[in-house]
Length: 249
Image 1 (cartoon, rainbow, N blue to C red):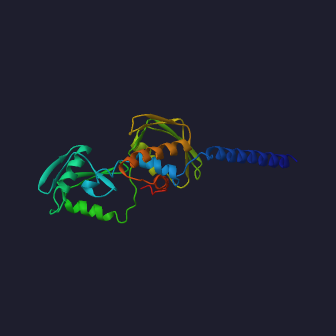
Image 2 (tube, one colour):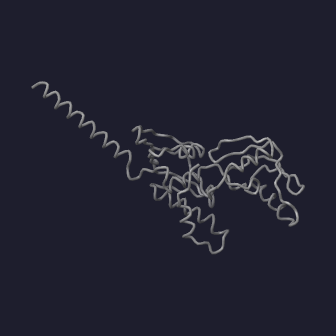
Image 3 (cartoon, rainbow, N blue to C red):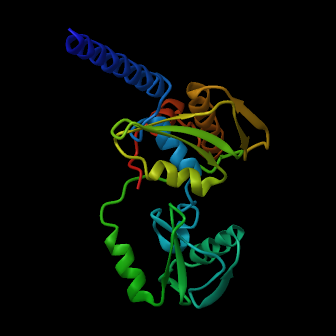
């Protein structure tokens, strides 16, 4: 009889712990949890990535950026590009004449910066061409530079495979981008609201309290960025594009 009672008690204990684990999983993987493959995660990635499209007049690709300062020779003119304002000077020289090659010739060595803030030094044109050729087919995936996050941001993460929960304190864009970049398919995460952002259009602070408000605020700033420079811009097409799920490289 004692052995029978022991078995019953043991089974009850195991059952209770099993129910507790299921309850914990339900708490950690809530309706507000995000994964790597949802539109809001893509927006977080694009807001926090290193800006790679802004200097396309130099390198012709949004996959990476050329670290400044850098010297270039365009149509026999040597230009010292030390800030983003100098991109306009390069463009003006390219547009000045129609009978030249408009080729950007870098004064090597140069340093390339990727979206995840990692860098690579290139010593000559051959290395640059090899890097550009290695990109292959490229997706239309560029930074969102209309808004900045105000750090720090707390993120609660849960790996459903290992059943491990962690809390991260994100201090800057590099940490946020690489957190998203390194997410696994089994990872869920939740942002600790409220979160504050600063508009780069008017300098105003925007405070959001949930995922829906965060997504709407980012898209609204994108619309403010794009509409003034494009006549008759279709707002619905902007929203559809920005909420699409882009690959996170």
